[in-house]
Length: 402
Image (cartoon, rainbow, N blue to C red):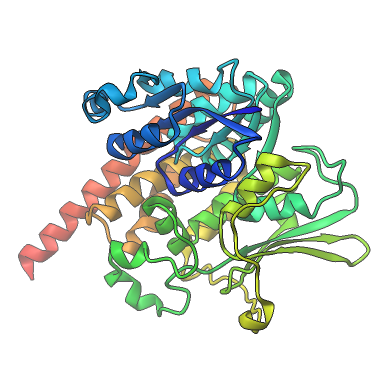
């Protein structure tokens, strides 16, 4: 039996992971669940799966969790606080960790799993974006196995030679092609984006995802972050990663070899496929995903992304080329800007405007250690909030004079 910890269990990736695990009770034992603030959903999961451990990063939600569980949660040890997630990632009873905490908040527990030598199923792309060299070094030192769960990176991994190693360019590979759905606004005129609502941005045409990643998909920032992630995972330069808009989300990514061959991984847009592959690798197990009907799909379209309309992608490409602390700044500014957009304090084009302003004034240079990452992250968040406040005040002044 393989002991599994699911960090971020109440999100869409976490729920899909639990679904796959439940299909194979003879193979996997759920040891631990962890969430950020969603005490209600975590309580439901604890009652269903009865793990030995559970954790909430938000200590304030702890009393609510205990109230919801009552006597029914006596068999599960509850841990609270950010350090609780790192503790669960390092448990001796756990051999496999699903790292699905959204954003920079997932970095400490992801690093803990790498240092502890776990099979690390990486759905938290921000860990590689912010601290890729440090995470890869921790995985090597701890003897961890790092397996990508993002559908695009998992697709690339499936198309690579069997002896491919994390962080090293695979033999014979010329480049990779990252596919993007283009999000809900791929055909929306640029001038109409100023009126986009959070509800519209979160209505992804193909995938069921959380609000933050849905907005990232709408701005194409998600694809920019995946570009940085791909460079770290597969030892590639930004020039060796091409982004292609593929509205059907059936071809999840492709690998081009020096002999002219293009290998692609196809499947229905369902995250249980890459999750099952990462859980069982190098074997394959049933995931619950319906077979892809190519005759029903009918056609596969591809086109270049519009980086003029979707400035976030261009900013991410520039950060990938610059390296060092640039991706840290990019990610921090994006997280703050997306939060402001979801709270209706910033319009949709304002997300890119905030990121660009922060990137221009925030710290640069190489990553010397984890303290550099956290310092750049914190400073960039301050700059982003200042920029958003300034934009709000300017808008209020314009409104008063209208």
